[in-house]
Image: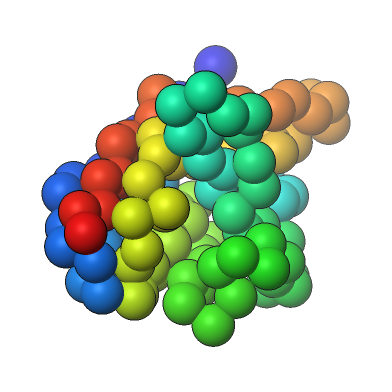
Length: 120
């Protein structure tokens, strides 16, 4: 079994910064893609940013230039540095990991979510 534990959410004023972390643990051979998604009240869950094992990143247009995703493969941890936060960034942020087990099979996992609230 695999667990994703997120940290770093909170309340911040518009223009401020937060850094989210997500550590994966369990029976992991390797982690393929890791990423962050978010869901605001009344809206669908949407992609924020992803990063492959090789470091290739992808991010939503709405966060380009403000958010940076990175990962530490040795620690099975992914980070999301969020700068110049806007009220519309308010949402529950979920960590995601595409894991390969020692058996060779794969599985998708989600964290429990961490609340980010940006006040105007």
